[in-house]
Amino acid sequence: MSDHFDAIILGAGQAGPSLAARLTSAGQRVAFVERKLFGGTCVNTGCIPTKTMVASAYAAHMARRASDFGVAIAGPVRVDMKAVKARKDAILAKSRTGVERWLRGMNNCTVFHEAGRFVGSHSVQAGTETLTADRVFINVGGRAVVPDLPGVRDVPYLINSTILELEQLPHHLVVVGGSYVGLEFAQMFRRFGSEVTVIEKGPRLIAHEDEDISKAVEEILESEGIHVRLGSECIAFGRCAAGVCVHVSCAAGEPETHGSHVLLAVGRRPNTDDLGLEKAGVKTDEHGYIVVDDQLRTSVEGIWAMGDCNGKGAFTHTSYNDFEIVAANLLDNDPRRLSDRIPAHGLYIDPPLGRVGMSEREVRKTGKPALLGIRPMTKVGRAVEKGEDKGFMKVLVDAESRKILGAAILGTGGDEAIHCILDLMYAGASYTTLQRAMHIHPTVSELIPTMLGDLKPLQ
Image (tube, rainbow, N blue to C red; front, side, top):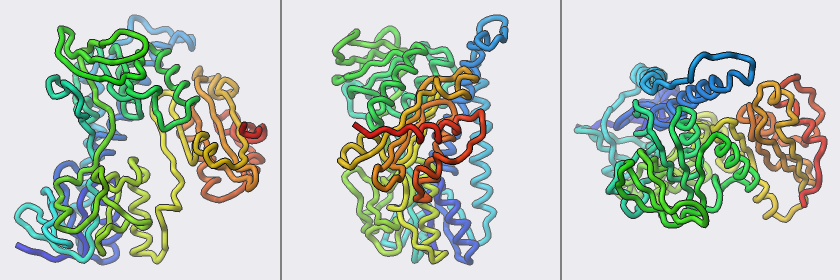
């Protein structure tokens, strides 16, 4: 059978359902195709389940620190992984069900719970149905990379989705990959009670961040008993009595690490390899990401790509912003562009990292005169009062225009406080606007104006 719609949307991640709501509200008839789980990565294997478990890990950590606050807890703190998973599953299921119910309840929206595949430039096969539309929106997300390392296929391994299903605590979790996903799971499971080792091929953790941030994060993790192995150039896997033997090549330390479980956290890849994009004429890059322009249009007129599959961001907030850009251009006569977006992201270890704009390394590469402000969290009253004074905040300012170029807050509340700076950057205002603002005491945000009042030339 064949059916014609005004629009076809492939994938129920962050951008797709919101776009369907806008299009159907505008009177358009929409075919919505989702092959598996409604809600995409964020709801099912990303933000919601992981941050739910991070919250459980934080509770365990604070319970162990109770005596620091004058609180007595009888006996050792024990984590019930089945209960942790049950809490995560309940919160996840509510979100997933909510997305599906929302889509199925939309007027003018027909949901196809099938795998979708292009059979022509504007034709999609969904089960036994052939769907056609003048406009097609691709929102198929991504998945974890399984690296082609020696022995990896010979041992049991976990990725970001399967580790969420554990009901028994690993004795020793070996995390391969020292970036955002790997570090969040490393600290989480250490706080649950596992021994944890992080193996990173590069010379430092989270290589996209500045060196001072990488070093501070490494110190935070090691202070909790996490073993960090850097410079692991020759990673290989094999079975051993403990479970899995991971070979590393480091300047110092044992040549092998024996773990009961291994988590592979070395990157993501787009879910574009089985979409039949070649039949639609949609171009992809060498990594499989769909090539888009500044308004998320693909190489084929009438086809857009949103979310993780376009390589323009790997976060829920960038995916949702993709929807906003597409909807503004198509429905609101509001010419929004990707290039207007200020980069922003977070690392959800404890304490969290909030980052916006340019890094210090990127600012230095421009060669332009800049100002730098730094404030340790030990000087932030709110952090000291909470007993969470690890980390620091820093900001970089253009010395000529006086506009903020970028900032990072690694510290308690840093993922929230960073928005003070991000909003000012979007407003295009001088840093003095924020410097002269009166913030509420005691907060983390109140030290941002203080930091801006003590800028020094970037040497």
